[in-house]
Image (tube, rainbow, N blue to C red; front, side, top):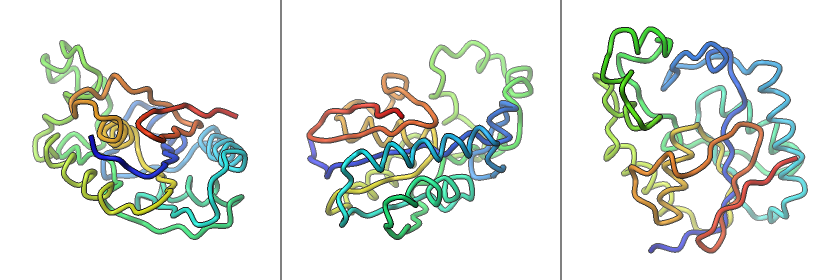
Length: 193
């Protein structure tokens, strides 16, 4: 198993489309008041987490993630770099659809037992192999402690890779907005406010 530096992984705060159960992928919607509060809570967590002063902060360039990073990392006084390898899964033709719309037109999605793997079947979207390659490339470029601000599927895949789990085992790692996933020495802890 590859050894990675110490990581603090954040998912962006709740967005308008999260609240509507609308698929975002590479599209974007604004943080809700709840999402802004979640980002502030993540800032409180990071302020107490012992993040080193020389840590790098990398964020997905998607506005929902970058806004979360600006709020959450404010207390650390560290610069934020953007990296497109932290973007959410490209959902192709499914981006912008609600889950209800998607399920109504796709019986195989209604029958799916895993809450994440079906997303890699989107017409014109990203495959698990493609997404894993970009996330692994990002992880391989990290040279020291890092705060990563990203998205739901991306966060899960990233943590599967760091923890040495199968790429397809996304449902085995917890999700959550408003929390920080701390990874060190092959183990993970969920930090809460």
